[in-house]
Structure formats: structure tokens, C-alpha cells
Image 1 (cartoon, rainbow, N blue to C red):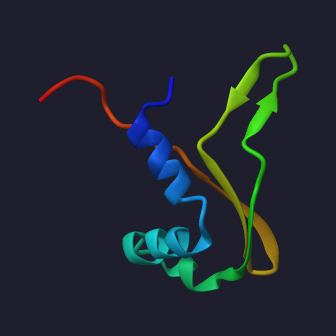
Image 2 (image 1 turned 135 degrees about the vertical axis):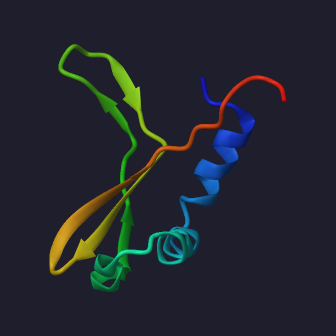
Length: 83
């Protein structure tokens, strides 16, 4: 079950501006320079499996990488419990 904080972060990262910032500021890898953020597409995140079970991911983006499609799955989960 998604909690309020998970839902808010999912909503935040459903906007290309914030996803680009997340990737470019927190991923220190050379391949980031080859991502085409201008053509990002938010993808459907609800699926039905072969066994007809409903599954949902947090946020999925299609991003072009060296002229090919790459899919970025942002799975947002915060630990439960009190501090």
C-alpha cells in the first residue's frame, strides 16, 4: 500500500524537469551525457500479468539513449516505522 509520502514523490517525479534533475545531479556516470531528455515520455505504470494479477510501478519513463529507447523505472519506497 502506498503511503502519502510515496504518492507525493511519485507525483513529483512524473514531471520531466524533476527527473532530469534527479538523474543529472545524483548519477555520476559517463552515460548520462548520452541521454536525450528532450524526448522523454511518461509511460503507463499499471499492468496485468499473465496470471491476471494487477501490478503497479511507481514511475516509468522512456528516454532516448544513443538513438535507442531506454526505460527508467523510479521505484519510490520509504521505510515504515517510527524513529
